Image (tube, rainbow, N blue to C red; front, top):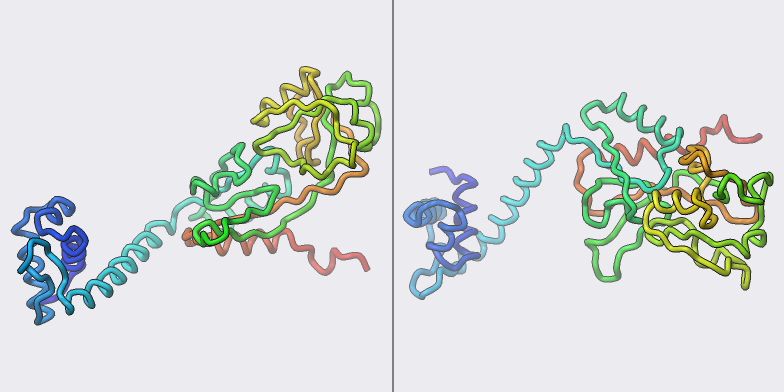
Length: 297
């Protein structure tokens, strides 16, 4: 008799449930089917695998050895099946704010042209991890390199830096500073600062000592941030890509001369299993690596 995966699955279920009856419920088959399947496996192995002498169904010494290998075999098969099914699965790309600028879109278009079986599906989020934390995205564009928790390897991330952007000040179009060609942090001290506390890009150490705006208006979404500034409730800081998109006709954007640039990272979970992920991250790295011919001589 040949051993099939169903034999291993039933055997594992009996060992984990410690009961033929409970295993039958778990496998959604009758108890006689479970008993007969285990007996067939025992015949193929040539030894008793389940100790039936007590009230619980426990693996024998031989059964314990087989159980370890059975679990590994079933897990490998399930992983292979999942990978095969996901060959044509889209890649879910999370992002926050205005990260889908022309450079990103060009790289995505090239990817989809070369890999039609794995199109990119974008998902905007107001979460700093852009869906990576809860697994709702496969890969994400983020402003901060994600870090896992110490001692929790399941929370580890990988990332690469794609580009850096200058910072701009977002102001109401009729603001007294909106006509300037450039601003400095010290020009904003007396303004109300609209702060996106969920996915904003302003680190706490950006402002010089004693130079932070005296008033702060916290918001939680990009839409609320945009509305608050357009309504004249305050000013905000944002990367250049937001300014390029002009998200609201009532906003003006002025370059911020003395603030560090904002990095854009591509990040993914270390344990991510999408079969096209490694190829996509390599593609993005190539797309954003300057060619030698473009370097200044």
